[in-house]
Amino acid sequence: MKGARLAVLSGLIAIALAVIVCLQSTGAYAVYFGAVKRSLPIYSVQTEEKKVAISFDCAWGTEHTDAILAAMEAEGVRCTFFMVEFWTTKYPEYVRKIDEAGHEIGTHSRTHSYMSKLSKEEIEDELRTSSDAISAVTGKPVTLFRAPYGDYDDLLIDTAAEMGLFTVQWDVDSLDWKDLSAREIATRLISQAKSGSVILCHNNGLHTAEALPVVFRTLKNNGYTFVPIGELIYHKNYTINSEGKQVPVENF
Image 1 (cartoon, rainbow, N blue to C red):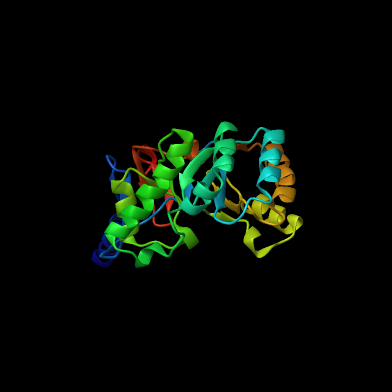
Image 2: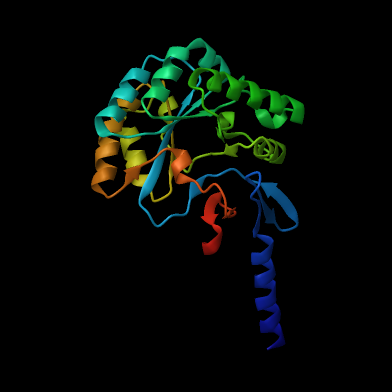
């Protein structure tokens, strides 16, 4: 019996060490792996509603952006675009067009660098100037951030949170930057999406726009709705589990 109680106690301790600390005033959160603290971004959201968010990273070109916007307009889908500052300043007409179409815009940094290699001051500069560039066009505050290359460390996540930004990754990757065919992209997204998923695409993927109508119609037929990331995530009263899933605190 003593051995069994020790085993149960050990299990409870392990669970406790995986509990997330949520600093609700800033949106920061941390997960403990053993005795090591790690700050995590949001990869997906726990929800009983069949909602998903599709997002597009904007860093290079605009050749396929109009077709992507047309596909979303045809299906009544609103999404989230993450823009690098140099893309924002080079294509302000697209920033305006995306905003006026009802889509959400977040920052994707200033220079699209590996931000885990930067100092706190450099991170703050990347996030502040890129957010300001977006707001200068849209007149709206920026509250979402996606790290270039999906590269992050504790300092980046914590600094972004201190600046009022939710750092968002993804749990479904289109791999459209590899120039997969429209069929391959659609198959990946349809087969992997689930309630609370965040889907990663790129605004200049070669076959992304071609894949979208099939993705939208199939997932809609399966009962899903598409919302911008800001309408999918929880802005308070949440925790993050060790897989990066955002969980409402009452369900944790």
